[in-house]
Image (tube, rainbow, N blue to C red; front, side, top):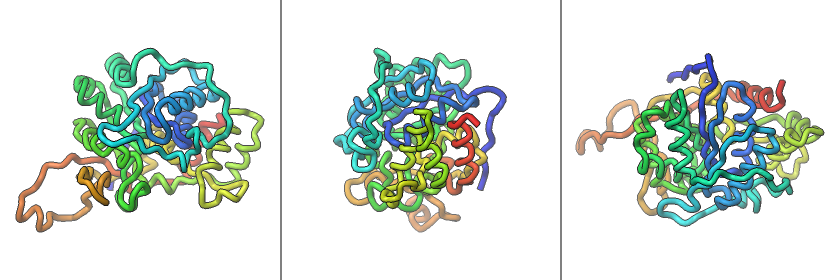
Length: 326
């Protein structure tokens, strides 16, 4: 097992690719307020809701957060092959918990997400860290259309996949399941990749007292954060002060504070076959080759830094201190 080390001398240039989304919103709230991150752009893709809803929600969150004029672009409205299959049953009809948030006054830029990704990556004076918290359609289109961007990508930290149990299916996590081909393309990017999957995603819960404090705030940004956290725990939806999952925000915490997760460099591939395993991230944790390799030869597979453990209290404190401005 290894713990990753951070570069802390100057802000890390990042681009977030999201499908906002309750927990994508929590990720954005954190990212735009942390001094160690330079959010150069936000790109939007269909996932938790339709892509136009994602653009609206993203602009609303940035506006509520008082973020600077970060460019936001509309991206793919459907996966490479599959139809759109939203998660409104989790995130509400508007994708943001149906909280009745105001419509944004900000507007997206007049270029598509892939164009904006290319522009911002190549224009960055330092290599960029990509943080996809959504289905990976935009990233796959970027890598296939403009492979030259790889020279200025430091690494990719994506929320997706699962070592153990899925959520979209028994074995597949939603972001990868939504567009398995795109996820498979991501793994061929040729840059360091960290998989922040369901195994750690589900562990990082904000205590009920902190959720209640945020919900009671007179500051609209903090009250929104509290309501979003409260919406994220369906198992305790009847409780007025439930614990709240940080979800996608944990992946952004892992960029700021990589020592908060424990990773192992492991072969990972995505199941593209029809049937019950489609979209599964197959993570090879075997200590030695098996009969398949002995009889059929070793297949080349990309190595991914797979998050296997997370310091929950550390990330909760980091997120709260950043969002609340403590």
